Length: 240
Image 1 (cartoon, one colour):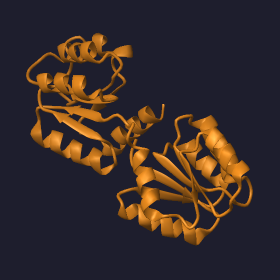
Image 2 (image 1 turned 90 degrees about the horizontal axis):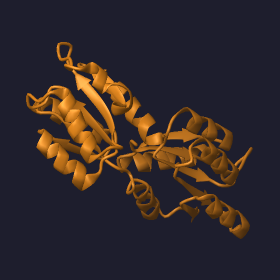
Image 3 (image 1 turned 180 degrees about the vertical axis):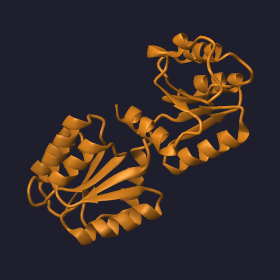
């Protein structure tokens, strides 16, 4: 998942302040000003993390967190509160909140917690022998917050798969002059559960396309493809 974070507080100045701070640390923040608005935002798209106040008008942060968990069980939420309410804190921790921070928030600790939400995120492996394509795609995914690995050959890709266990592989269909079906099968043997996203040029077609359909392939893109489409596929995949 990308470094997208949702900041939730009914104090708009607090949202603006925290937004500026996390942006300087490489995050892509969005703001919400109520629990209801935050739940709707999570319903529409995934976030790497949510930073949310407990005491808000309407539904409180704990109830909003529970609603978010029902929508996206993997969601990572850090709560903030200016009140000492042991029962609320205990309820939030039982529901699976990463931490309940006291206000005023210690910024270094908050930023460290945000980084911790990414530690269990598996990387994306890009496999291509087209150096400019590899560099451009790798840079774009890194900018979007994805942990990115690159391989310029099938052998390199297989070694990386065994060592790093990426969650997804973006594979250029034309690789090393090897038949695309053979490349896919080799990757599947090493990592049967990896999500494969194929990229192919207009004149690059597999010899046996029926072998690359269904359960073997998660998605296919035709070059040149809009970068936003690949990000959309990866965001959906990592949110599943």
